Image (cartoon, rainbow, N blue to C red; front, side, top):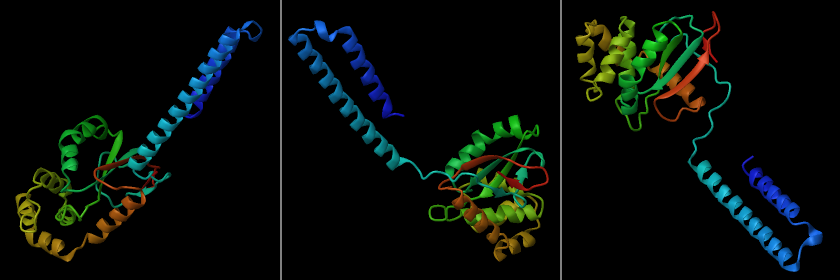
Length: 231
């Protein structure tokens, strides 16, 4: 469409010029002037097409790969907030060591929860996407949240981890568990065993298939009744 518009404009201008200057009444000077105008318009059109192509190439070189269409996620085992049967689901792929995720947690998520989640309109689902190459503590932090979830305090640990991104080391995770009143030996055993590592790897694989390349990344979809899938 972008390439066609200049051609249409050019044709309209040429047509207008010919109607303005009937061929039978034009002097040779007028005809020459008209030819010069048309040639100038053609050159301008060619230059514009070249600029548009250069811009298109530049944009394509900077664009991320397109997200696959018709993505389906199973969320049966994922932590969520809101009504379980909500028709609309917001999925966040996130990383506990990611500064942008923490900013979203502080500044945007509270409004989403207030306006859409608390009233049952939207179900919010958290899925892990720890980028270990730049966030070496993120994977174990997600395990810590899941281990806290085994004791009914997933979201409490979730909040502490995002609120203390400078304290996500192996010696500090048990301190968070203790502050939340968790059974510390049980928590430590869960953390050491890697009990939830498989689920985290599964989340990573799902995110990669869906085109996730950074965090936070969000997907908004519909959930059918009695079907734990988001489409």
